[in-house]
Structures are given as structure tokens and as C-alpha cells.
Length: 351
Image 1 (cartoon, rainbow, N blue to C red):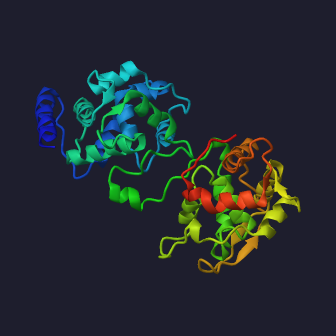
Image 2: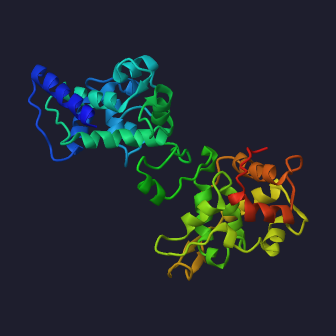
Image 3: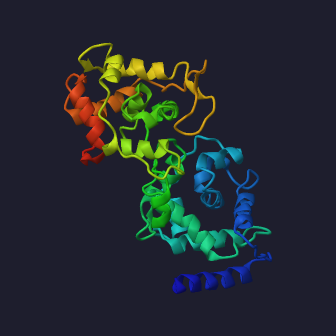
């Protein structure tokens, strides 16, 4: 760390002596990020190549969180459909390496501000390091903080997409452990799983597998787990969160309600039930957790953009239960999936 700070200090002396601008220090890094935004503007930048411009890339990084890259594009009036960052440009920022080190990012950050009229440095290099650690966490390079070109380009391109999850929530293990797990979802989800889960909240205290909405929520969390679902359903002030292992086995009444009395649950049964759960959704009419008053509304959706979304999570469940050939799953096998998949260590791809 001392070497890193010395490098930055030496760099600042070199650049500020060469610069025609007097660069004030600021109490936070907010103004330094604003300086990068000022440098990334339509007067001097081709906004249709946002991710191949140093100031714009650095501004995107220092804006996150809370802003995701797509929001930065929108706020700057840049087209949403951007070409991917190219590797030759990346190497101009990385010092010629095929990965970006923390020090290279720091140097690029201070270097861009040094050539920005009326630019403001962050008050401490720790602010810049925090920005870089966000990228390292998303890409999964907390151990070295050296992020390869393709992973950095992926962050710019995909981190705004709902359901695309970071490798870890933070490079700080304490923060990572205290953060609700991200729920990976295909883009075809369109927010539908979250809506079904919000309906499940009204009945989850009676058992995760004892209500149709909660069972459907368990299905659409197939790319995560029912343990993760329970973490999202129970508020943080409830100290004793249940786990899947403590939940009663799947209600046969719920199973047969979804199947229409058939002995197996088919993909079409699940599609019908899932879309039905999103039609005339339940809303909260008041009351504390576990004693809310649900009310049936005239609200519909959001629906998946395609039934392929349901087919995907049902394909995962069919693979786990061993019914890829028909995707028709008997009660006992489906109940086993719900009770044991979260702790089984077996996470097959959809069939």
C-alpha cells in the first residue's frame, strides 16, 4: 500500500507541474467524479463510443454504485446501444497490460483529472481504490485486483442487466456476508419472479411450500435456491429466519391444485399457474409482517417476456428430479426437490 501511495504521489507531482490548470483538492471524491463527467460530454466526446473514451469509462466507474452503466449512458444523452470496449483502447488505460491493475486504474483516474480544465482530485486515493474494488468484486478478482480486459468490458456491458449477478457483493468479506444474495434471472423474467415473491410474502409465515404463490416463487428461484428466497422474503428485523430444512414438505393440496388433479405436474401446468399468479395480483392492505391483510387487485403483471422463462426454470427442476424426457414430475419427486435442492450441492442446467 505504501508503494502504491508513493506511486500516486509521484504521479501527481509530475502531472500537476506539467498541467496549465490549478487543481483544487476536495473533501470527498464527489467533485472528482463530477470532473470526469465534465470531461465526458458531447462537445469533446463521441458519445456513440462511450466505452472507448477514458473520461467516460472512468466516470461510469466512479458513478457506481448507485448508478449502473446504463443509467450513466441515459443521463449523459449517450445511445444505449454501445459498441463493446475494444482491447486496444483498454490497453491505453492499463499501461499496455491485458489486465487492469489497481495502480493502473489509479494512474488513469488521476491522469484524466490532470488534463481536465478545473478538474478536482479526490481528497484521498482510498476513494479511487473503493471504485476499483467494486469492479474487482463484480468480476471476481478481489484476490489480485487485476481485472482482465474481457471481464472489465463485461462489467460495462452486462452489470446493468437485471438478474446478472456479481461474482461477490463486495471485496470486504463482512459487507459481502451481510448483503442479500443476488438472484440470477434470465432477461425474459421481466420482473415477474419478484412480483410472485411479493405475493408469497402474505402467506410465507404459514410455510414456504403450503401456498401456491410461495411454491411458484420457489420454482422461479431455481437459479438461486429456496434458502435465498427465504432471505429475501423475511425482513431483516425478524431475527430467526427459517431455512428450507425447517419447512414442512410440499402441500399435496397445492400440488393437485396446480395440476388440476393430475398425478404429475407438467410444464404447461406451471405456465398456466405462473401467469395466473400474475393476473389480478394481491396487494398489501396493511398490517405487520406475518399478519398482513392481502387484497385482490386489478393489477396484472409484469409477465415474462416469453413462456421460455417458465420453461427454463421448469427445465432446471426437471433435470434435478430426473424427468427431462417428459418434464412431468410426480408429487414425491417435486416435494423432494423443494425440500432438498437448496442443500444438495447439485445444480444442473435446464434440460
